Length: 161
Image (cartoon, rainbow, N blue to C red; front, side, top):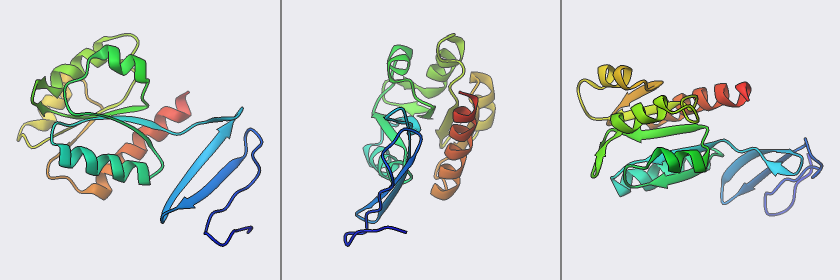
């Protein structure tokens, strides 16, 4: 396996080949297709900035492109960002995530995007079903389980493309 002294590996840069690079103990696997990166993009909407920053760092370390919002985002913003998944807190400073989830699932341009609703509410599963969320996870959540759930839904989405 070719490697360099700084721990970075690089294989051909032709479309369809794979680049594997480690940087600052961070491993990312990026497939190239026609010279464009096909990273899985997730949109995280969470009003607690500590949780938002933690989730951004964790998912970036897992090789995801992460777009974050600290408040309720409009469906228009989701259409513009074209994420492979939306990770959505339910209780936001300017509204409720389950309302945004209902809007996402009602819109023809966004209804196919998986939504994972996260919250500390006791009736989360019922709320998630009512708003059309694909999955839910209660806070405080197990980070490994959340990462696995996100990977499960983004892998299904990438395969469907």
